[in-house]
Length: 138
Image 1 (cartoon, rainbow, N blue to C red):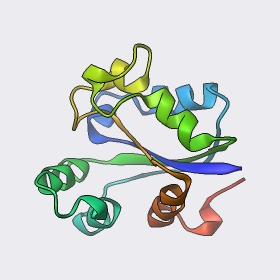
Image 2 (cartoon, rainbow, N blue to C red):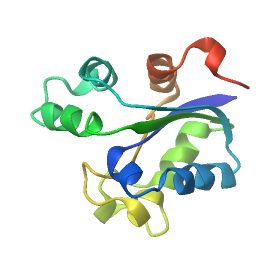
Image 3 (spheres, rainbow, N blue to C red):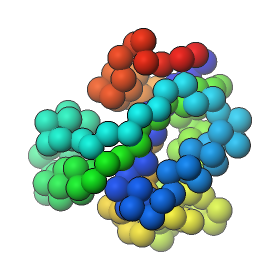
């Protein structure tokens, strides 16, 4: 069974969309196996977005993700990574397919409401940043 990390980002939290986003993924047949609400600090954001540390948008990305609490979740299922990314749509809501989460709820390329792991390997690394083994319930 494949797993993926999902983050409900500050713009979606501010608009009260966490429940709708999580329910949408559950409605797509994915199993919610871990859930927590947290306010990311700079250190945690730096670890999560380490792949982008040398990019010009890194500081804005960290400032945004630490601006207010988020929800972190783990979903499991066959092909979970691909299924979640398809349900979310393109990173830029303006380019996301109709009916996808980002097309429906995203505001712009940064404030796109959600994050999802981009590969099974990265999913396991990202999950370990947010959850201890005993906090995931298969």
